[in-house]
Image (cartoon, rainbow, N blue to C red; front, side):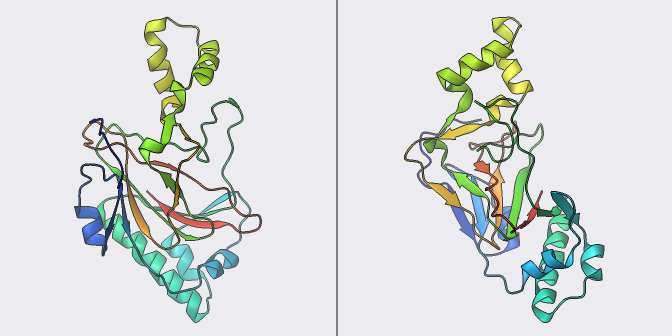
Length: 232
């Protein structure tokens, strides 16, 4: 993967789904957005579903069983169409109602849950797609405005206390337990809100990537306001 000298402009906007999937990441660009002003009541979808778990998955068949108002029907049509677009492209989109994710309290100095700024990794060439339809949107940060946590001396010292192997294998240990995927924003970092309704493509860490992976995180949910998120 190239170590790019600058990421002053990491986001590219596109105007349709075909452009989103066909435009490769390049230079400093590692996030692309199909900006949309969606019409419909997505909160009604959430309210009509019986939610008992922290994360509840919805599929097309379940969506079609819901009795909805006209605004709810508009929202449902968008969800079904987005699922179809992404499936036809060859991805496996998941539509979730999220009360909250599980938090990782195992290592207070380096939590590895999705609330921590992190990058995704894959052994094959692929991208992350996501859209927040309702609730707090996901967030990204410029790579130059974050520090890989395993490079922070205090955190690295704590991680070495967990490790009992040879010094030569310490980096492999950090990768095996995904510690190397997590980042800490710098004090003056600009955290970018991805907004509601926009369909995003984010670069991930894989062997064929020509750009830096996009650093992102799940937001803290508002109490009593679940998120409606599609991701793949």
